[in-house]
Amino acid sequence: MPITSTEIDAALTAWGNGKVAISKAFEDGGIDAARQVASAHLDANYGYGLGPVLFKPTMASGEQTFRPTKEGALAYFCGHSAEYPLDRGFAIQGWRAMESVTCAEFIEGDVAMWMGWVILTDKDGKATKVDKSFGYKKDADGVLRIVLHHSSLPYQP
Image 1 (cartoon, rainbow, N blue to C red):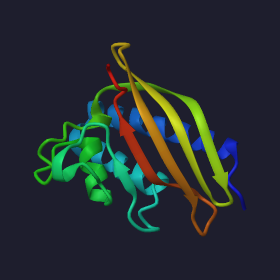
Image 2: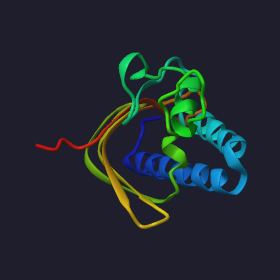
Image 3: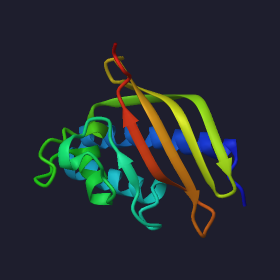
Image 4: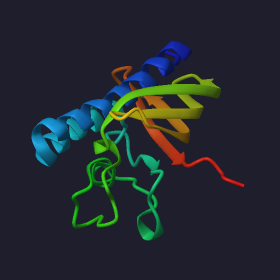
């Protein structure tokens, strides 16, 4: 069954809600609670069961720029990892809301790509805007999975 724009919108909302849930889990229960919520979020939304996920986080560099494994994504979202010592924990920054602004999407059967801005707002009302690209594929059960996640800060000339 082909992917629809409505499914992409729902996937973007689920991604944003996941960041808010991870932040709140960290505030309420510490790093172990945040890791548990983040792991469940990765399992529910990302396609690690399909193969490597092409994940390039916003603030990653050097040999750890790309994160094709769940462990690398979990470290990026939660920090506190000896294997990824530069990660501060993107998803534990006190996020309270997410808005997405679509530039374009491409849908071909059970594969789709989305590009636009994601604006995350923290508990103090400060907004962070990032350039985002997501690639999606439906798994055997028809669940939309993120198989490409590329993020960068907007260019500042």
